[in-house]
Every structure is written in C-alpha cells, then in structure tokens.
Image 1 (cartoon, rainbow, N blue to C red):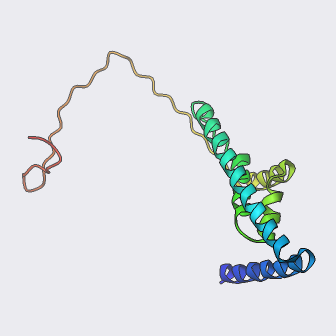
Image 2: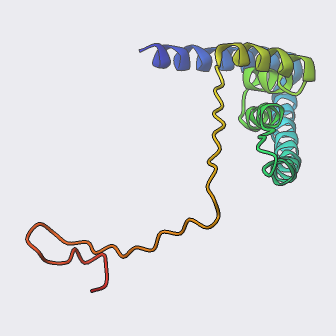
Image 3: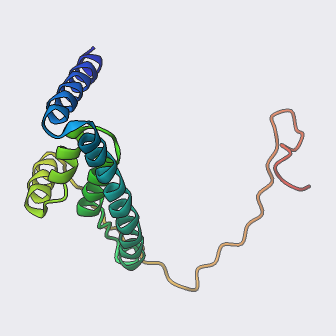
Length: 147
C-alpha cells in the first residue's frame, strides 16, 4: 500500500512541476528541458557503462567491486532519461560527488560485511583415485552416468 501511495504522490508532484515549469517557460521550453535531460542522461549512461566495464575488468582480480559511485551515477543517468522534473532533480543530485559520498556512507553504515579466509594445507603427494558409480534404489543406473 505504501508503494502505491508513493507512486501516486510522485506522479502528482511530477504533474504539478510540469504545470509550474510550463507556466514559466512555455510548452516548447518544457519539452526542450525534458528532451535535453533525456539526451544528457543517455550520454552519461553510455559513458558510465564504458567506465564501469573497464573498472570491473581491472578490479575483479583484486576481489573489489567499484560499483558504488558508478552505480549511483548510472542511477542518476536513468533518472535523467525518465521524463519529469522531480526525477531530473534527483538524477542531477546523484551526479554531485559529495552527495554520492553521503548516500554511500549512509548505506554503508547499515550494511555489515563479513569475510572468511580459510586456507587448506594439503601435501601435494596425496592423490585419491576413485570411481563413483551412481545407482537408483531399484538398482538401475540414474541416467546421469555412463555404465
């Protein structure tokens, strides 16, 4: 119910902002702003996708995922693509590094990270040679193995 109420409220705010901005800059100005923010969002998302792909390739070997800032920039770009002035304002806010840092800090404070490091020491000369035969309870092979 909260989600539905939130979506309805969001839509009403967007409509009100369209009316207010439209009264200030006119219909063509409003359309130009909406189309311009959409084009900017597509360009940012395209650039961010390339940068994120490169960063993932570089850092996957080290076990790091540098997606926090890049992910928020991509989310901001998607919000710029969506028509509406409230989504544009939130999308533009996500482009500002200090705002992203605050969001990441708030989310990070709510998350716990657990890492487990376990090593297995095995002599190299221990070799186990085995053959596994899988059978059903009725004695027939399961079909997953070759006889």
